[in-house]
Amino acid sequence: MASSSAAEPGPRLSDRTRRSSLGLRFMVLLMHVVFVGAVFVLDPTLDRRIHEEPWYIGVYGVLVLLTLVQYFYTAGSSPGYVVDVMRAGSTMHATFVNTAALSKWYIFEESILCIWTVALYIESLHLDVDKAWWKNFVGVVMLAVLIFILIFLLLLCLFHSYIALTNQTTYEVARRRRIFYLRGVPDRVHPFSRGICRNIYDFCSPSQKGFALEAVPPLEELEARAARYTCRDIICCRCC
Image (spheres, one colour):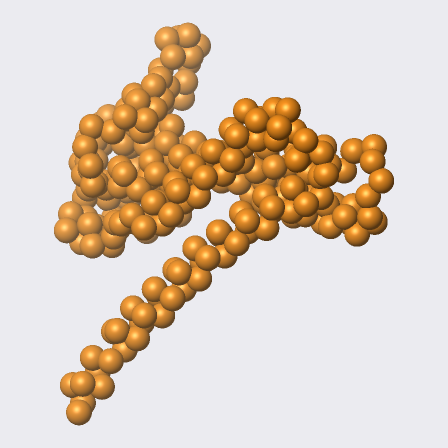
């Protein structure tokens, strides 16, 4: 009895995590349906534009579909397990190539979709047509929420762009001082950066799948990188 009761929390925790994940995916899908569907309800001219400018609404619809597909594909992909990798090699830097690229592309697509939807809401509020007062009220509320979401997405884009440009992971940025292999590394040094241009190339076209393990560079090289930039370094694009 004791052994069976001790084994029960595992499946329960797994089921709870799965339900939470499914609930989150449903909420994301519902938000897209509500915000995209509402703009068609609030803007009476969109029906006419569908016939006059089918390419405009068609591209918007493709973007909505592509963003949702990218989200569900990213949410269903394996995120990797940083802790297990750190235990396997505590002196190695692990970059989860596929998941990192997928999540950043999804955020980029979601930001474009959000900007486009905000523009549609603003257009609907500036229409010189008679509308019910509640449509204007709902439009203003939805627009305010969308702008808040857009600000969050843009900040997230900036953060992930910084991570991609410096070849870091979110785990390393959040727990830099607690990670064993980053102890002793100067604060201003990104030990695994190969230069901005090479980092962008590796991010956009990774040469391998799964995760890549990299050794920490020698201390002499890290100390040399910690040196302040001179005018010559700036002219020669040392950061690239």
